[in-house]
Image (cartoon, rainbow over all chains, first blue to last red; front, top):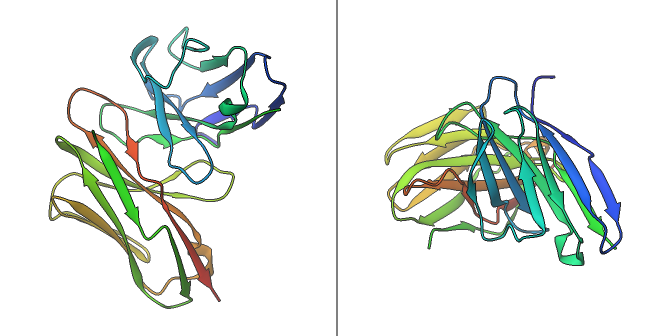
Amino acid sequence: DTGVSQDPRHKITKRGQNVTFRCDPISEHNRLYWYRQTLGQGPEFLTYFQNEAQLEKSRLLSDRFSAERPKGSFSTLEIQRTEQGDSAMYLCASSPKSLNTQYFGPGTRLTVL
Amino acid sequence: EDQVTQSPEALRLQEGESSSLNCSYTVSGLRGLFWYRQDPGKGPEFLFTLYSAGEEKEKERLKATLTKKESFLHITAPKPEDSATYLCAVAPQGGSEKLVFGKGTKLTVNP
């Protein structure tokens, strides 16, 4: 399978704990995006990388959120001191160039108890 | 502020009953409009990209069209396997790479 992959698929954590998600984009894609989706809503943009550079961040990405893409390949999204409001599906997408199709992974479902 | 509104929120069809989903948008400038299909618990699956008014794209029972203010996803003779949530997204002008999504239309096709 050469699509976008995400790990883990599901994560249950207690309020106040830190969590980290991983995204592996399609191998030839240099652009990587993170979105968050809550029940009944469309995905909301969080951040965007071109190669290893983080070029855009949404105001939704509070100080508790940090994303990295150290070698321009896989990316991680970390949430520190999780809150119940962080419960959502976290989606990763990749594309080969600007305005090209963004291909999404299966998502990581986060539940904060 | 860039906005995407999809209607109806939910649609129930009988197998073979054709219909259309609407996506209206308000953006400072449109770089592209995207349609995705999303099954429960999964990530969005790409369907179409439209770039300019008058453009049309087709795939099996689906046809997407674009005007200056809205896009339609026409479903011809749907089958139960077409049941899903259909998401519309726009890429606004202004240097951002983000997509702005609507809330989606949940389609149910009964056999």
